[in-house]
Image (cartoon, rainbow over all chains, first blue to last red; front, top):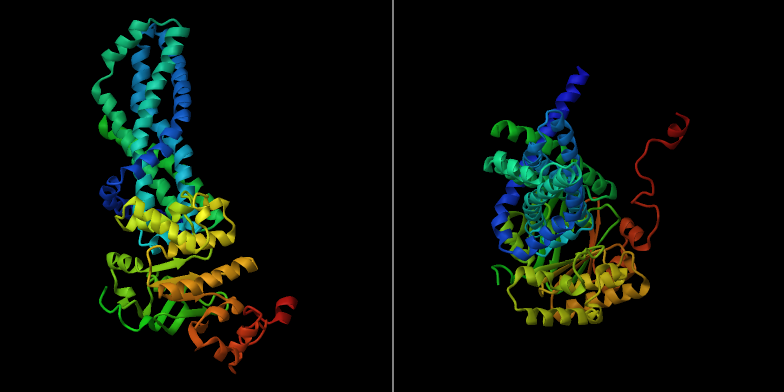
Length: 255
Length: 269
């Protein structure tokens, strides 16, 4: 009975948090139109979350593309179907790996810094000071960071997929000797606009989820060193799980 | 000017009750701060002094009682009205609470940039004037991390008064400062109060500093104001708890020991 009780209590706690995050999301959405009227604040955050994540996204994208190229070449060559390598790699990257891996990398690189930055601002009373100065910290601090992240993730996912395809091209065509013309023409043949849109929708949803989780955890972090540390950890863990769950749901819905 | 802002008292608190869980931090507190005065709020740590400031600024909601600040009933204000009231007050935080991603100049300019449409040239003028008043015009381009504790406190003071507030709140303005910085902050509190004609509330337990600057001292204990008067009156008070506090005696009405079971029983089981 005790076990059941604890399990139920945990479930209730999770649901309560889900409700709190949803309410917080609502508060952010209400402030987004005003947030967009100060594009300089948002663009600074796109720079911090997006541009500064470019290196890790590009390096990861290239290596992921090479690995997929290698694996796909190995499988396809057993069936003597190496020609469709380009199409296979592009579909995998655009529909799945681009958005998912980008969101996971974003959580590790930018989400953590968003959460710890906002958390520390809370711990050092900077958010409180803003309130006293009649400045809404949600509007001034949280909304630009949320928007910056939500805008950056789809762009990063596009870069990831593009670089990944180049990585696969390098392995498949340059190293393994697949015909370059076939690589691109088969890709053109089999990749439909809907496939690209599926990836775009996913990256938009993941971007919103990853940014929301980061700013939520940071804003609600207990004002202690331990609290901020925990918030940072929770950002990565929660984002990873939520992104994978959302990925399944969106895929099931769209297919 | 907002209605009621001409009343004689900057702050009027009646029957204020604030609870955390079941424990009443403030329990029927009454406090009046007349306009133009420097009022000190003193008391042992953990008596809810900072909580009281947060109630005055509307960051916390009381469980009961009335809080009138500059003629407005704070707990009844909506977010919009509350922000309008806050534009008329400034607050100096215990650790300065400077925004770490902005330099000194931008920190002081922050309330102006966020709350007004003033042109850059005018903002520059105002900010440099305020920085000059605290003696840090030359530090305008430094980052907050490059400032000493005392300098940070002075920048925060310049920021707190940049909107020309009617009411300035100080949360432990002297804690952690060296004697020279304490003297500087002390002088600045007196000077800003008298020159700008505003009302100041200083929350502190640094007896020496507070008694030298305050017009009225209010001593809080167990959620109530237990003594109120000029520093001289309090220094000569007969009340045991006031005497304990003013002389810094370790034991007295405020016990040295946190409530605990009997010592002998605790040790011998």
